Length: 200
Image (cartoon, rainbow, N blue to C red; front, side, top):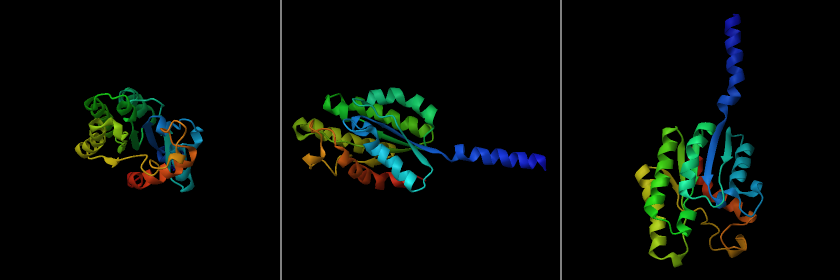
């Protein structure tokens, strides 16, 4: 009887730790909340939405302004080991594109991030980006890189994070690159339908 009671207490006390599930966000300035308060960025709004819905998911936002796919890849393994995420959102590549880095290199880095996340048992959401038209054929190839990677890895894809705000100049900061605080709920609402099926 005492043994049964001990096991029950042990199991009950472990439930909160077991119940917590992490969503790991690996992104750049668009996810880090550049130019706005961190709590205004869409990952923080996602965390608030999950809490309001009574979800057992937590958001770990490891996005860094200026981050490239190579930087994200170098940080991913320790992040997976520490946070053991159920879902990984990979929102990188924009800085690779803006710097004109080889797209094969970007695809390789992002592919390795997807593979490592899968091996860790996580579900993946790949978040794509687009470049200004003045990047010419490179911009087209850049956009297709995300499609090709998602198809080859059979990974959920949000084609363009900034789609709901891209044509609205008033929703961008003075640099015309980073969305304002007012834009962040729109970004979350755009991402949510693709992310929600992954939250099993």
